[in-house]
Length: 276
Image (tube, rainbow, N blue to C red; front, side):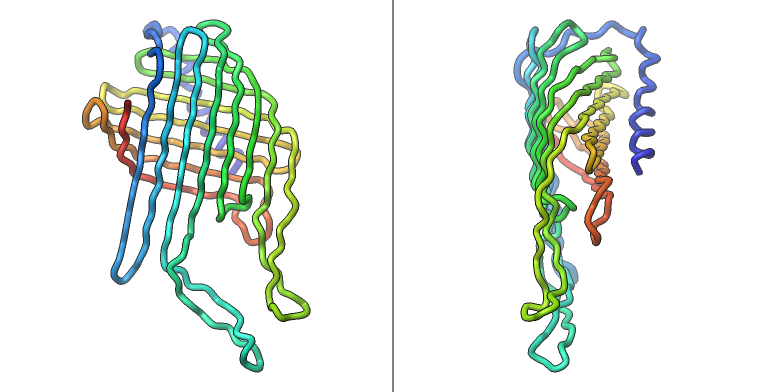
């Protein structure tokens, strides 16, 4: 999986051949941002509710380029689970169906870039994530690094950031069989872990025309323990100056997970985007 994500990141570096294209337009000054959200609700034979939303704010002037974002993902659906009924002899397994949360993730991040010249900058970044259904219930990272705007013209933008950081992760609690019941199961909460990581970020945008654009962001936080990779790709089509429809595809991967957890998560979204 790691090789696939790295290959996709390299693939999007192909626009480097267009460095001699149109001269870069002057960057917009001041605050700008986007808000996007998607909602799906089903009832009847099946019951589910899915909501994902993101707010992204950017600030740019002659000296600074800053980015702040908030993200939420929440899903509820009918879930069938198996429990142990200890009131019978011997104990029996009972299947029950409940309307429960199956996804609940919140994320916040910020970065501040101090410009050294038109292309290079020093960047400090923070990221916090809480996820009840991932291998890690929370993780946060603080880093500092160097950024470079490799490409910026009317149709393409490509930049890279890299530098050291410090990361703290809390593995998700899990259940084990109690050798001396009751209760039949025990919840175990592993200790949190922290280590120095290398943070890397690639951001690419291609404008096919005045209304259609493709964006891809690849993030890596690699340390001696877990290595975290995330790739966000999206295709947006404008309906007006402010509104657009966006289809997004996200891949997230952790190199080390506890038994019972998968290393890779995938998310496909269709959202309404408002720009301001």
